[in-house]
Length: 62
Image (cartoon, rainbow, N blue to C red):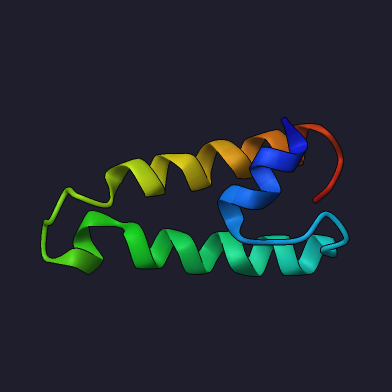
């Protein structure tokens, strides 16, 4: 599960906690409906990023 989470965020498993947090915030801003003029096409990627971050946080990576 952790490997998929890193992949969803576009990071390697060697990423530091700071790199994980930065990438997570970038992906939230990029895929949030407000940033896409209400376009809901990237909602799946937004949810995947949220889920990935939760998995990494629960497993002590950040």
